[in-house]
Image (cartoon, rainbow, N blue to C red):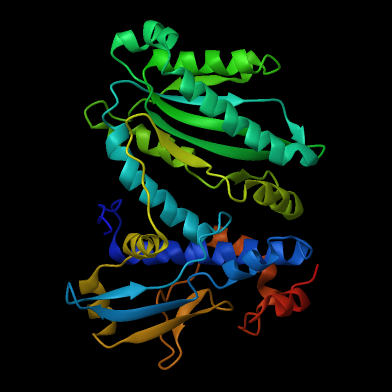
Length: 355
């Protein structure tokens, strides 16, 4: 049974509008992957992202007796539509628990950059190193150094990769932990396992709130948490898609984000995940009914207008242009979708999307 988490506050239409922006940008990045990565093992997955959230179905919810919008998602790591929703799900689940921390710290653990051929081994090594550190938190030395101060090692961690010059890759780990002693202890253990690591490159920062009069969940912790669970590849140049493809291949099957200690993990089966993603992307039922009535309607993504369109009436779901900043980016692939059609198979995509 899916728990219905409280959404981060947005106006109803704003939620769908933000998804329009994410869908447009995701279309751009997906076409870039399809253009540049024809031989990739992930090519079919990139093609699936092309059709993510393509059809939005407007129906009456029998339980609430209100109109709702549902769609299907690709759930791929490079998809901006799915990443926005997944981040919101994680924030809604984990932030209330992180709020209980008396003294939260943001920790970054790094190693020297590595070449492409070492990516997979480096990721596995970092995950193994973290398991080793967490295991150490149960031994007597940790209890004597840290736990006796009534603090245990609780928090969340994520792995990211930044593309660096000369075809090098910087894989690193972010953590949010409770207490300065824990933050310093984790860095100390990391350096003991990795004498080659630059001590000055490890980072420990206190998480401050924006307004001391407000609770943590409204303050700076929200922004730090978004940073901890954001998209797992950072590219300096938007054209580095072949390099990003290598990273996503190395990340495949790896758990990049997880909770530890007394933090309750979020575990969903596929059906629950689909339901929760639609809940998080939902628009208020009353406004939907006011805009479109209470009849079942289908809106299909029209790439040449960057909107979902009711093929029967021609009405657009959003009905507003993209912000100039987003349009200036995505317009570079407009010539690929001027016919308003997307390929139906991966083979068609290879033919349509050439360098």
